Length: 178
Image 1 (cartoon, rainbow, N blue to C red):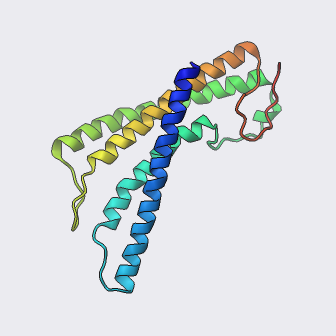
Image 2: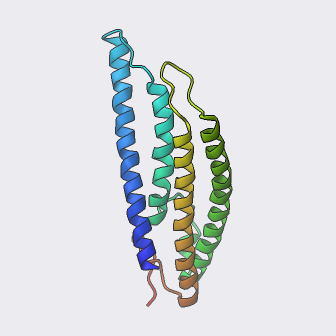
Image 3: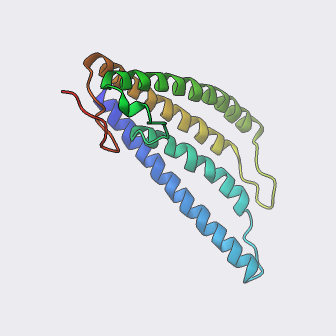
């Protein structure tokens, strides 16, 4: 399981870095469009369409990495008052709900991506950008998130059995029971 976890972590990091580069590219393209439009009176064609597609990469590319670090938002008012086994049970419930949620998104994303590729869907504008790559990125991001959630589910089930605390605690506040 550690090997699979390492592979998923590296893959998520690569996707996160690609999303970061996409964000930088979108930012520079937006600045170039503003400067071109306001100063040079020559707008850059297609920044909105390209930025729309890049946003999918930025958001869905970062999901799995945030899950690896357990950095998603959660209400911790009650969570930290519970013993480690109860926290693990709460985490299992969260993992199962998230797997179901992202599973539904993945199911729809795959259908939409296939249909988008089939009809060669593209943006409307001066430059026609194909939309199917963004739809496949969305599906891949959801699949990677589900894989990471499954790994956390296994880890949390082991925590229920052993009563151990969470190993990678980003805040350093979860107590470890040995």
